Image (cartoon, rainbow, N blue to C red; front, side):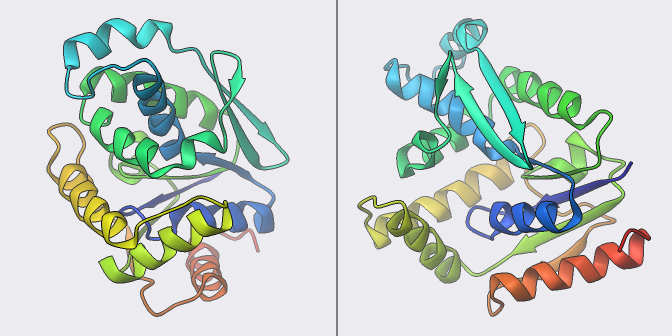
Length: 223
């Protein structure tokens, strides 16, 4: 069994790359960001103030999150409703960043993430996988890209999903999310000391995937 941790800021390509690597290696992919988006979505749909930590602490037990891993693809359910696509909105992304600063939320979700990783070879992406969730991961990668490139990618993702978007607003939200993620009190976004830094600004998905596979091959003999 082995584990691969991919960290990085919003729009750096973590999820897209991780999914492809999981498929190529035949291992489980776990999208941790989707879990935070699910908590954020619950708060939005129930008109809960995202800055009200005390209120969010009280509603956490009401959030029944179920994750199914089907052929390497993660499907996520919120209180019985499949929300895999619903959580991909700009609003859910912003809400995810807001609730991620709350310790009780992180504590609940990190335990789910660690439980999912037990007994499987996995690739997991997020903000604090290599530093907190899987500190002993076999391979650690830190993906980064310019704000402009990440904005472009997010716009393309929303366009592909058929959703309306405002490019300037997305750029400002990415900048704000970076600030929140890097400055939060609990497990902020940062490169693990033993992680390999990879700037993907001028790379396409195939190039990034191949580069990471090279790094994995050097670390573990699985290819």
